[in-house]
Length: 90
Image (cartoon, rainbow, N blue to C red; front, side, top):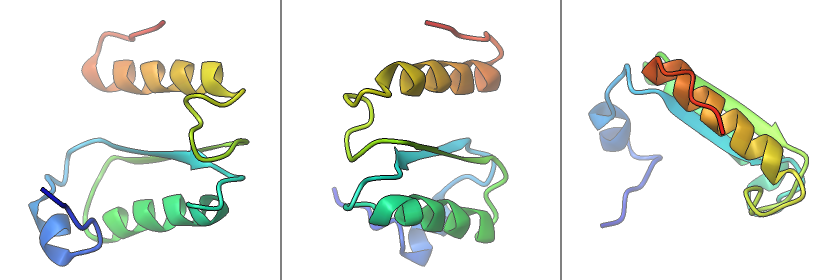
């Protein structure tokens, strides 16, 4: 199944209270050096999503493998814990 995140049907079918986390590397040419992450998050906000978080890391495309991976995972666990009430940590 292919999901086109830029189609109005996708925005409309995404629950407005669904927490969304957009992460990427600011040195990632695939994501236009962070611009793609910012534009994606902005599009969801503009379409009514109420909990949209953006995290850009100094890194390239696969930030979960890059030298910043410990920070990426720590922030991911904190973000998840903040939303499920458990204060998850690694």
